[in-house]
Image (cartoon, rainbow, N blue to C red):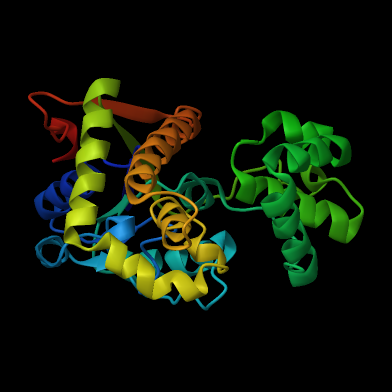
Length: 296
């Protein structure tokens, strides 16, 4: 049976290099599961694979969409499944690599059928988030859909906003639209999570941020400043520098905030992936990950 090997884990854990090693060993290709690397205007701040890494193994869904286009998990599932079906015609195995839990879950389990987004409601909720804060939206979600409130990552404002958007648009709880059964795939899925000691991961995150700054993240962000209202740019690494360019915080504070927020994001990623069924965790040995012998 055809097999999809999913390489998941927190940011800066080493997923890209491990996925490339696995893809080369299996003589196959890689599909990205990163909700920000898919945008062509974002490069340094999303740690897009380097030119050398992209040459080492063929990648799909990297820099294929624009920040001006409405891209979401439903579109990702449809596009990704089409790519998988096409590639499985000539490959027995494929590799998926990324840290976007919702994208990976969409491929493993399928996604829920939801109403189309209502821009007016979303804009209103985004305004509430900007002016009143996340706690206000959390309380509103608890009132509108207490069931989903107990399951949701309420620290992720995008998920809170999306759930509230459905609640307000349909006058029904978001949880009533969620599927109880998983989508059946015609290929086997094996999920591997990359895990590092916390101190090691923090050090790698801090070094990565410093390298991003050295490679030109400030210049990349300054070009995108006029588009900061777009959802794609409401992400760690850009929003802190937007505040710096607007004089709200110092450059040093912006860089430190990127490091802090990236660590917090990594923690949320680990929380998500630890809930993934049948995930096999791999730990570093001498600062590297070893491909399990049963895969080769």
